[in-house]
Image 1: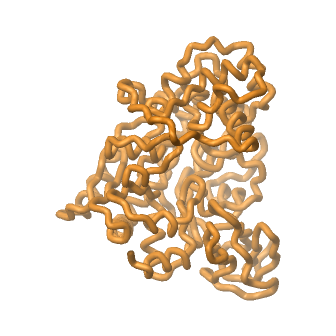
Image 2 (image 1 turned 60 degrees about the horizontal axis):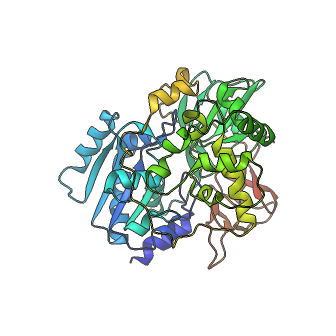
Image 3 (image 1 turned 90 degrees about the horizontal axis):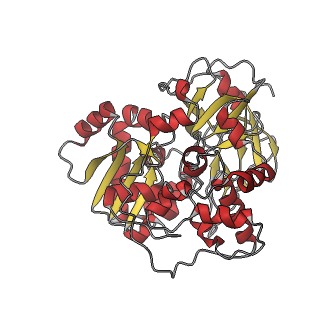
Length: 445
């Protein structure tokens, strides 16, 4: 193991650039047989991975090689959908005769980017329920994470994030933006001058979270900002109250089992049965007998936004049950003998084109090319917790001058977390337990 690489990653504050933001130095501190760059980008409308692999090909391959060497892996894979032929051609030309790296083409289905699905597609190994890819000798990394690892080795901390901005915008595009910039300012780059009647999603349309405050900051894990009309089908589904979800379930669930038939995790052999959870919830039972199946839910949304013929929300019910079981201290029983993947796993993949039609976003399925961001940023609010684990502790004081890249939040030794850096040069205006506000000299609030 190379302590210099790990120390560089820690110093730079590198975390998983998508999902929960797991600290990368912890993930790469293990030994693995295979490394997979997850470039599936299975969520519709997001274009970040494609743009990065096109414009930063050499840097990403260099980062992957460093990770392969660090973990002792025998091979590194780049899992990308086969429809991206131009990107694949570029990658293969850059890889040349390097036998240690291979491009693995994926079919265009959802959720190909679920890391456990990606592992199965590439290696034909099923990660056990409640487990992680390392259980089958594999580490999975996001494309931007690998780029940030390579930059960390050059002494460059994570101060920006690549974001696809699309939906109800004039000019869909992908930008490299300073962390802490507001959603509103980011949307203005694409010609949005009013947010009246609009709702935003941070992330993909399926698993992304609703933006409740457009003045809130983007973080290391922000990969997309999707702006939709408040009356769109997708927003109507995502804004249903839990009382409405349960009422509709009791009235309309016909126990057809389609939610289970198309559940990616159940097909993987994880024994996730959303139709059973729906059945039990419909009877209003207060105990958790039979509900532990919900713990394996990946919350991909395939059951509610694609499978259910009556437009019900098994995912929302699963999430509710998972939260209640977490409060009760109930966890996945990892001692249970794992099942083999279903014989139907290759026949029940959800075509992305059909999914886009189903959730009403076809008109937004357009290119969002990488654009240069060269506008001055007057103010950023940098969260101290942009990662899984504990928040970083401020190491600056109000009124201090900082430069872009200055360490402003440090994670305590031994804690799970990541360092945080200034994303612009300026003056520390405010420090709270949650964030640090920096204002450029002469900037406006």
